[in-house]
Image (tube, rainbow, N blue to C red; front, side, top):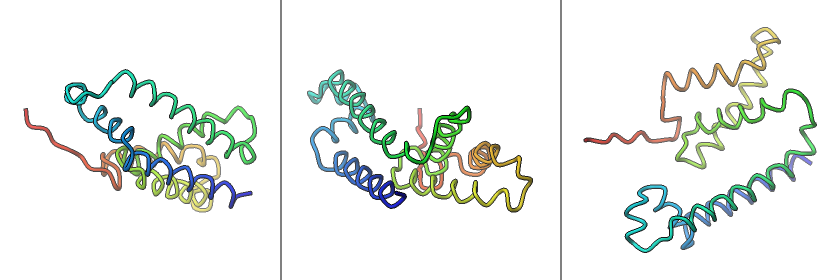
Length: 151
């Protein structure tokens, strides 16, 4: 079951990377994300890109839900899953898809090793502690880049 989840995740990440890198839609989405006005002037329909982005987000969310359903059951602590995902994105860097993967794996390892060295009740605080630490030490994330703008 775990190998199927890992395989499905890798297939989804590969498909998304290929979409953003080699398709016309991916280039349009990157252009709109970088500069809306310039993308509109180049003939890209910003509204259509937004609509397509929402559909793509829904599809990715549905696939992620199907992949995680056998592992995570309904509970009152399901909100921690969202916090872990956000923390993984921050740790890896928001602009980097491989960074988010590395951040997620690093967070998973830290979260599972924390009860061995710290009190067992701290397990649910680990994502918050990692989030605070990475924002203090390296705000752009491990693989993210911080762009400075001159005004």
